[in-house]
Image 1 (tube, rainbow, N blue to C red):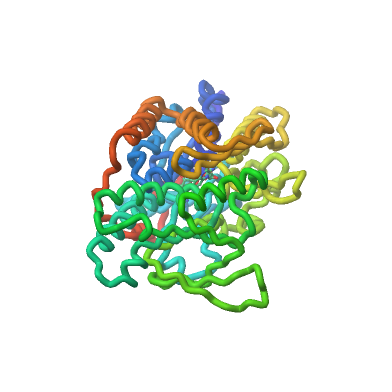
Image 2: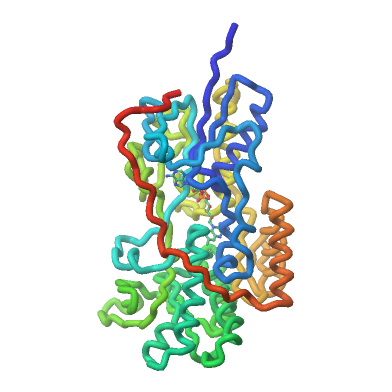
Amino acid sequence: MVKTKKRVVVLGGGFAGLECVRRLESYFMREFDIEIVLVSEDNFLLFTPMLPQVASGMIETRHIIMPIRALIEKTIFYEDIVRNIDPFGKIVTLSGTSEKRGISLHYDFLVISLGSQTNFFGLANVEEHAYTMKTLNDAMILRNRIIDMLEQAENETNPILRKSLLTFVVVGAGFAGIETAGELIDFVLDARKYYPHISKQDIRVVVLEALSSILPGFSEKLAKFAYEKLIQRGIDIRLNTAVTSFDGTEVLVKSLENRENKNIEAIQTKTLVWTAGVTPIDTIKNSIFKTEKGKIIVNEFLEIPDFPGVFAVGDCCQTIDPITKKPYAPTAQLAEAHAKIAAHNLYALIRNKQKKNFEYKSKGQMAIIGKRSGIASVFGMNIHGFLAWWLWRSVYLSKISRLEKRVRVLLDWAIDLFFDRDISRLKYLKRESSKEYKELDEVDDVW
Ligand SMILES: Cc1cc2nc3c(=O)[nH]c(=O)nc-3n(C[C@H](O)[C@H](O)[C@H](O)COP(=O)(O)OP(=O)(O)OC[C@H]3O[C@@H](n4cnc5c(N)ncnc54)[C@H](O)[C@@H]3O)c2cc1C
């Protein structure tokens, strides 16, 4: 009797999607009745924890990305953009290449792991003018922007303009914001030796945070250590401060501390880096799945309740911490934990086994705050300073899935100890123009 093939389609090749695919491969490697398909916009996995170090030029751009095809064995890979998910017809629509008008993929089982995008909280002018720190492109563009600002400031005679060129504002004091600010100040101070007219006092890095503390999720003691260390290094951190607009030259902020105080303050800057939060991508928000703040609602098996066999994992789904009753913070660690359970439950569904509930215990968290200092809370211990920084490097290095990339990152770090950073500025466009979407008036590939 000929067995009909069942197709499992995984959308998104980030931490969650790739972990899921690799687990599925281990369950179904020699089972030819199961086909695994992975679709992702880029053909690589981006190792986001090291993204700020790409922006500061410490790590070479390609060293923090792993080609997906080198990480999969049995899986069929499509480098493509997911445009629509139809869970009734069990069809996923992809943009297709410029030769094809579009691709429709049929699935039997689906895993949605499309991650998140920068959340501008509806501030349109911020979205238009701000720099972001989410993709590899963002990091490369920011690095070039910083160098451009130094180049322009070096020969600028207007003191007001010069000050605004050398003022860098980072919005958001979570992981991404603090690590970006730490890397940014290290980079600018190191690069300064090539710019004789720029002194240390001319450079200003400001972090704006709407909450009353930095690095939420860490203990108060560790967050305080990080705060004081960053202040010592010359970073101006303003807590309880919300951004109301940014027109490319001036950021307007208001204090949230004293609600009576309606004063709006202006900071002159040419570079604002927005890391204030993430939200699921528009394809998810526009889908028919039930969402909470844009995140797909899933049951205890990470399955979408109305659609058996469809799972959502990673940044794009919502899982609640039973202790705090709040959603877990979106992290790579959580995304991989989701993926393991979703892959197991898919296997259970296909092979009539027992599904597992999603239960999560964080292994701890770490952040680096620049110049060989960091904070870490692991196995119930709170560590700060050099040891935490060393731990961060060791742990994250071991998490890079390919030995070749691990060696390259290690060499980048070693080179950075002995040599100056490269200040060559490459000209990139600020934002990639999105691929033109051709309406699907006919379907080329229906499997
Ligand atoms: C600067 C920075 C630093 C961070 N540091 C840490 C850290 O130190 N520790 C930690 O645990 N977490 C960290 N995070 C968070 C972590 O990166 C995310 O939580 C994690 O990536 C979520 O995994 P995911 O698979 O859900 O999403 P992602 O890893 O974002 O993957 C989503 C994938 O879907 C693809 N995709 C998106 N839209 C489409 C589409 N329409 N069609 C096709 N493909 C699409 C994307 O290209 C991507 O490959 C950091 C994030 C940033 C930005």
